[in-house]
Image (cartoon, rainbow, N blue to C red):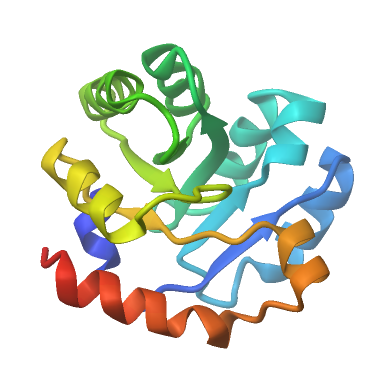
Length: 174
């Protein structure tokens, strides 16, 4: 699967559970709804390991993406290999990671038939400039992500991020 296939709006469901059993029970209820991406959330990966990715992959069809939300900041190639080896199509690397980490994750992911999504959670710099830098590294997908804790404490809703998305699309074509 190629990240370019995600140019059209695609529904993504995050399985942000700490129990694999709970995550799989919810997943089974969602399988026939045409969801394009199932995200194996960071809490699930931390509590259950890469096997959570394998279980999710075994339940969703080959036409559905599995994203491992690893939030990688170091050892990019290693984490990409673990996640993609377990069945993920996509892995996340944080925008705050060094370019070397992003590049190593990207290279290994693509060698294994997967890809990288760079996640902006916690990023405090010039988002437009960083998106351009990341694009120049060869990354084809970014996630302008505001974490759950921040959303709750500041009362941020998805609608509030629409302006930033428009600005990034305008300033960083491709």
